[in-house]
Length: 470
Image (cartoon, rainbow, N blue to C red; front, side, top):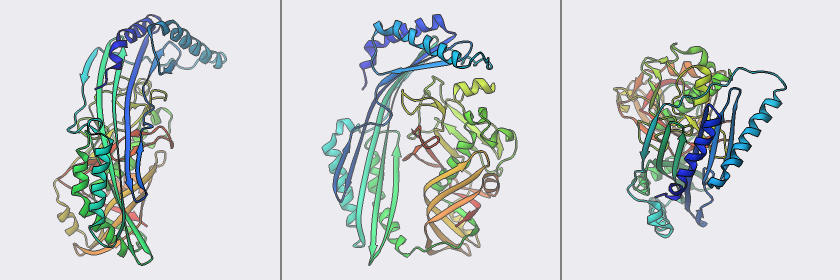
């Protein structure tokens, strides 16, 4: 699939070996990237090959007794090794000079336990093999199907994107190689009644290829029906209600309510309240939260951008906050093990603690049982965006649909749009039921401070909780 690194890998190893002779720790990350996006709309077709993730390149990192230095570049030959060594030495010297004699605490040296790994991408239909013309033809056919579902459907548009990347990580004791592919698609439909316009959107994702379009095609009727329903929606009376969250809404709560709040680089900076609540109850005993790559979704990877092997991190265990997610440097500063969450937007950007696949565990109830247990409340569906305040545990999210529940039954009445707010522990401690089926989705990206975008997925089961809506 990707092979350009194979010929220069011996030289890359020589670079790491040379740096390891000078520094207690040295590593190299090489990224080989392929990205493409297609779209079909009323206005025509879109084809974008500019790329996500920064393209193909390298970043070296070294640690000495006082700090850490990095250097990124997009071309490499063995003749460049002396130049790279000199540049890194100069950067460390400039950093020390900038301290003006101040001696900070020593920067911990990351662990470098021996590890070797090579894993390849898994997919059924390779977008590159299928080709632009065939993909656009398939998207057009799905769009035409959507337009024919109801005379009130005014427009439909689809967008599909994929990223396939190979990453090599080399250090003195590690030789890691992974190739992964994710593909996402979004279907948006617009309905009209007189002068009134309403739209609906559904995202799709997989750890794989064009086979994601099978999901899209099978959901056309559902998205059309939901779009038509929106024509009868009205604003919701503000208040606190018993709610049933669909898996997508549960996922947004996981991501926004407790995901960013336990990214442990924020613990190092003392910018997250979660730091003070380790081994404390922060949620109902029905809530168990995970992050990691033991599930297959768009954010799955076998090692992170710092060469830490990934796995499963249990963040909350039956309501008790057990740990956070952390990159290698934050882990060293906090005296804990890294969790495989050190991620870069590209080889040119810094590594931060970032979520991957984040979700609540399933429970034992059905959605029907949850709805039947509510005297008056709402079924929340189709989240669109959210934000949180890790320092104060506040949350604010947008949800597209709230379906009214009265006397244990859906009435057919719909409210939209919805603002979901609250204090995170109050919301999570109010959870009284968890569904038996687990669903994750990874159609979006996550930024850190409105930048540093990486692919994530989130989800969980249907969930019943007490939530403030407006």
